[in-house]
Length: 251
Image 1: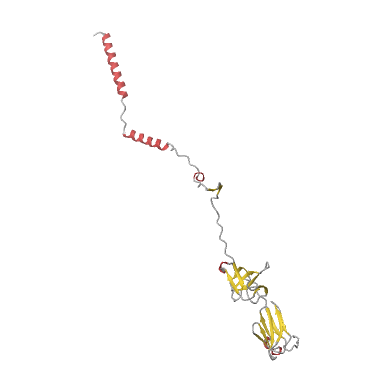
Image 2: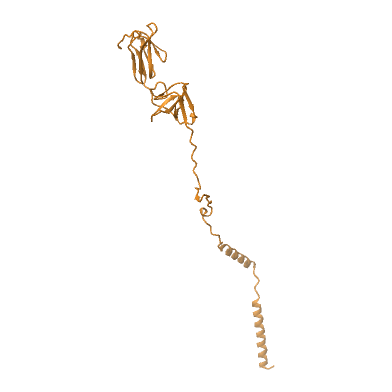
């Protein structure tokens, strides 16, 4: 065989071998277990690294407002403040006669007004320590106290709805002293007052409530009226006239 022929055969063999090598190189390689784990890990990382597309949120007070109804085209407030129901008025009426109004809740206080028969006035407070109520004095801007224990007073309304009030002004004591030689009987109150000469332990003197009094002479037949007098808080009245019209001085 000539050298030229041998060279052609070798070139053909080389070309065929090169083609087979390229074909083998194009076959994908079989992945190993380690390659599979690496690929899965890369996929998980890629999945968690991808940002989620969240919907845009609108502030609550913008999207959840309750529509406010309207009346006749005018807006109605969303929240209407409810006013408390006013308590009913309490009044006191003088029945069967006139009713004294006093400075404080008790007979030992001065009389400062009168509630005439069949007239009424407003009650504004109730004393927690007694059955007396504070009232408006008719035709005046002042207040006073009236007893609700007497038959001369009639309450209309519930006094339990009134504010409780404790009067702290103590009354000033008032006294009557007998300066005559005759024993006296004092009304109202049915008080027996000995004469001046039985002045043992001040028996001819007695403490009374403010008001109008009459002294009757017990030593004169018929027990005539000896003296009338008016007494106020902190004052002392003296009986200086007996039933015979004889006047005495008070020591």
